[in-house]
Image 1: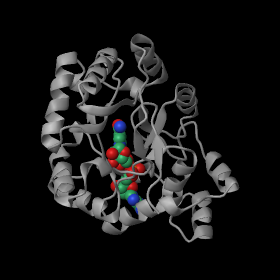
Image 2: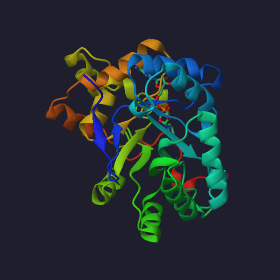
Image 3: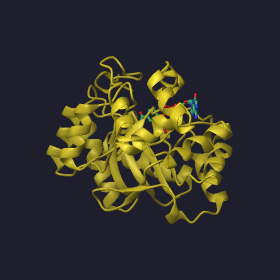
Image 4: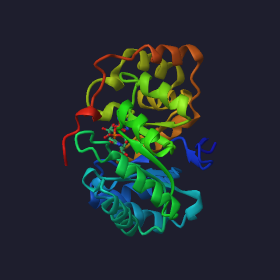
Length: 278
Ligand code: NAD
């Protein structure tokens, strides 16, 4: 079966399961991305800050897959929120990727202390108008900053990419997304390989019942609750395994059991409200 897609509020389609390349070393990014494309991923999530856009672009070109069958996301770094800097940063990303547009461009972090997230958002709106980016969204925006960019511009992000996994389910942001018609995209869906998420007994029980891995269960849960999810691996067998989670259908009571794993202290990454100045 092909990867399911979601319809964004701007009417573009996004493959619900993609391949993330955070911490994929630039020296292996082309090889890892090529493996992912060969395995069947059609959605790649990179960022200027990952320093591997060149490798991702190389793999895309060498794959021979028609551009319109691929969905490529990159992100604006914290030091380029000022309007002209943002426009230049987007051009530089396109150059490194070797693409004339990306499918999704995100402000990587709001950086509330810097106070330029509305200006950055206006630059993304301009980039979309110029056709450099098909869809625009944000990442790591606390709810007040998310509401503020919408209020200030009248333009609602198509996507909000946030840390989200069974131990940190982001209910408040997800209900705001539902109100606004924003698609939730989960980063760190496997707990980033830190902590014990993939050893959780509830996930293990469900995995066993399906002859699946706990990583696949964690990914299938994201698909079941309507999120886009972008697990990362450089291990060939896991690249394939993670994509195969699209074919794992969880029962309602299994989804409910995972819903109950949410923890008040479940955040594994940085709190976006506390993001320091670049
Ligand atoms: P992740 O939750 O996808 O975890 C990746 C790690 O999980 C791997 O390094 C490996 O240790 C382990 N793993 C992967 N597949 C496995 C499997 N099948 N079985 C067992 N272990 C497995 O963490 P991530 O990479 O941080 O997040 C996914 C993607 O989200 C990133 O690559 C990136 O594209 C994006 N991301 C965005 C932000 C942001 O600020 N917007 C932050 C982090 C990540």
